[in-house]
Length: 115
Length: 113
Image (cartoon, rainbow over all chains, first blue to last red; front, top):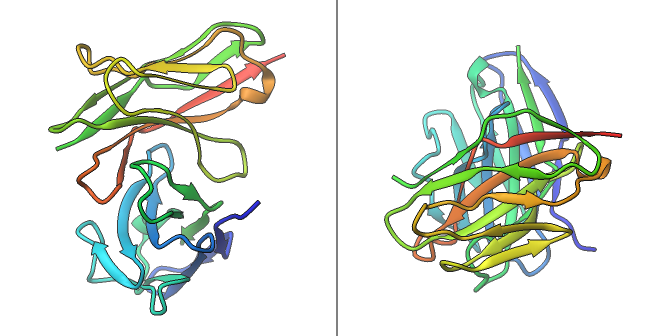
């Protein structure tokens, strides 16, 4: 069964360092999402791509976060510099073009701990 | 703005007990409603959905009915199993918002044998 791949699964870093997460969506899924899930809370959308274009990045803290999907396939989310409050699970999800609202497929996530 | 409120957890039940997890929502349009489940060490996966008022979503013995009059989408199961132990998230999605989801805070369910 096709899955959304994410790496690394776990990342521990010190504040002020740079960190990057990678996501490979299910083949053929044009829409890709990055969500952040703080412990004890629900996922919150950071950025949404349609192919290589950003559809919504209104909740992305652009002073330190960046996201790209250069060829419209895999994607990278970067944080520089990391802050203590960035400790969270970073989830990638994808969906088919024309999929109905909510039919998202999630990866297992990348857990970030900032010391 | 759009929001989802879930009953606070954690919830601990004995096997074969009845489960209800409450979920209410606030939305400006006509949302679709979802329950996602996150098993330990796994990603979120769609459990069930309902796209309009009075629809009932069901899967794996779980059910939820879209109640527009009470803006609710409560999750129920008649007899839980140990394997149902997971975190359950209620979510809404609006068709005009690029298929984004707004999630509740999640409810941790533990089922004891």
